[in-house]
Image (cartoon, rainbow, N blue to C red; front, top):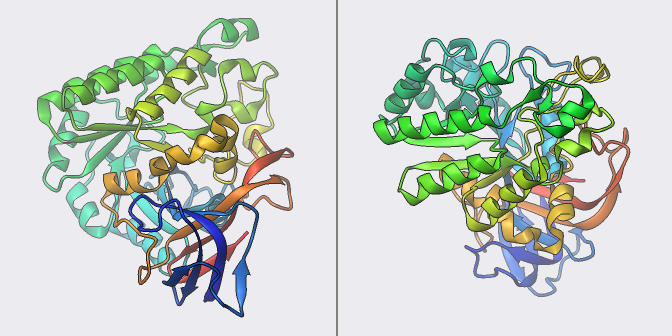
Length: 417
């Protein structure tokens, strides 16, 4: 692997070349030179207004592998991640079997050895992600689990949640919880409000998220530990976390990228690719999420890549599964929402998640391993030719969007888009 990235703006606050436009020469997985107009006779990556950052990290994706590989598997999921700009992906544990054994951890580790996309398994907090009995989290940590959570399921059992926070303090582990009271969201299909009433669908109240966040913050204050809320979607939730941070609690959170764009009003035509959990909420909630990103309350942006096959999505709205395929359009949504200002939030999917997970920070500097994402504002169309996922369950399928990843570099490999 020997190539040059031509005239790219470097975005890396830890690099001495931050915000400068340079050529970058990479050879054998290492950055050999960063300079103006490097003489080179070989493979080049070119493009208008190229940018390069350290490799992106997605803290929330579900590849359904093992168990439901017809929806996605680690090969197609990694391909989708690569063209979406991700060099690292945290995978949810909701597989069959659930990620709760040393063998299930090693499955992803073996794949990562030969892949440009490094897969970091999140191990389940409870057996079967059923919320009733704790897993052997110390053993799973030693085996290589990056964090602990029940993935698409909330940790509903209060005593289990408290003991999980206590248990993980033995090695400063991160507990990730999806804030949802499932008793309040049972049989719901979208955000509860005027829109759900007009559409004749049972709603999922924002109260379900708020109650769970309040509970978990009280437990965190009581027990100590490290707590991360994933997929925060409500204005009240953001306010609670902001207040908890001001009090000094060790709490962090993330938001799904599509929640920065869509609201419940976008579901008016019963588009099942917009049926997600938590549901897209009101514009007031969306604005609160944007404010939370800007003031640092929200630490990370995730793809929430939950792909499904056609049989699970091309149904009546109330029968369709929750989730959509999101990794490939991650950059395009950011550019649509923020315009050129999207670069201000790049730490939300580069350095911030690595700090939370204890992953070594790459650096764009001479002599450093090349862990890079190369991108620009080019337009492209998500269709059967460009789609790398097994799933077509994207709200952008068939559309032309702005913002394209040109390449990722990681683990001594170059993946071109």
